[in-house]
Length: 361
Image (cartoon, rainbow, N blue to C red):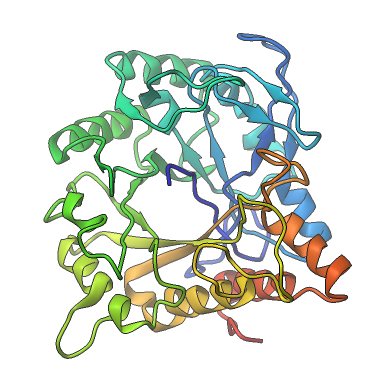
């Protein structure tokens, strides 16, 4: 699941209150407005404004720099090819706009890594590799964005969303440390993070490719589980006989590293079939997925976590007509069920992150 992550919390301030957790959408920058490769005229549609209309107030969002020719799909389903500097050209807007919650997460996966074959509006690819020109691309991204990405505007920089999964690992610890150290030279004081998922019901599915200890240059570890609906499942949470996937994660964390959890609210295969809407991956209600992982991240294990990430928000035609993100799932519940369970869950998670309130209220 080489997907970017999204955070869900509440109060919109230039700098979240001390002690607040982080939460908001990963597809914060959805429409770069590009009509051709390398165009310099930029415009964007931000999903944060749409979330506020639903009463969901994130205190952060993740903005991703696309890899070259990444298929940026807009709210009308249109695909536009762009380049990895598209986000850098919008740095001034991201740093100053009143519609942008700050500090936000800056995802540079597409600057550093590429796909084979290269992604485009007509080519889909999930085979990633470290680009040989990654340092030069980071330098150009930095020069293009100027001083707009700094400790006041950026909470963390994502090096790569999924370093290791069931298919293997994209880069070893030495390489991740090298790239992370270079990022810290370019943007001093900003923490660096990367993603490492688990698969609690299939121990040999993903964790066998996760290093015994996480790279020391990483400050935060983003994680999610492919197979369990609730983190309280003994296969994830562990018990007296088995540490579970969570115990395996903790054994790999360095003392200063923190976890950021990703919870999915999406269907890639069309609309739901039951009320409230349920995930086609694990069969759980989306609202309960959000609330369970919210309670785990913000309450039960707050000492080791910093935020809850939700993939994805999405417009009505985000990615494809068959993709239902949280926004579309909410609208489906309203039209088919008469009431939405997911929207109150997202509101509760947002408030829990920014104000410390219950994930269940």
